[in-house]
Amino acid sequence: MTRQLKITLDQRIALRYAMPAMTAEQTSGYITHHLKLAGRSDTLFSDDAITLVHDAARGLPRAVNNIATQALVAAMAARKNIVDEQSARTAVNEITAD
Image: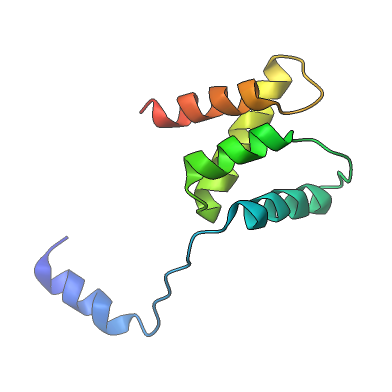
């Protein structure tokens, strides 16, 4: 990005916001809330899996989304009914491999 373009963009951005990281409890609630929005009210992530997702994502919502989604895929591929710690670990390894 050229210096002139960066200056122009900075002039046009009226508001900036840095979202703080979620706590482990907030991450758990965040995942549960999104699962309820998707129609799942039963337990789908083990406590160990949620802890691993939170730690790997450092509580950042976008990273939590990415890791949790990949953990769901890993659990499905392993034909598991619940996302366990191993599925979450597979997801973290998949996402951080790049």
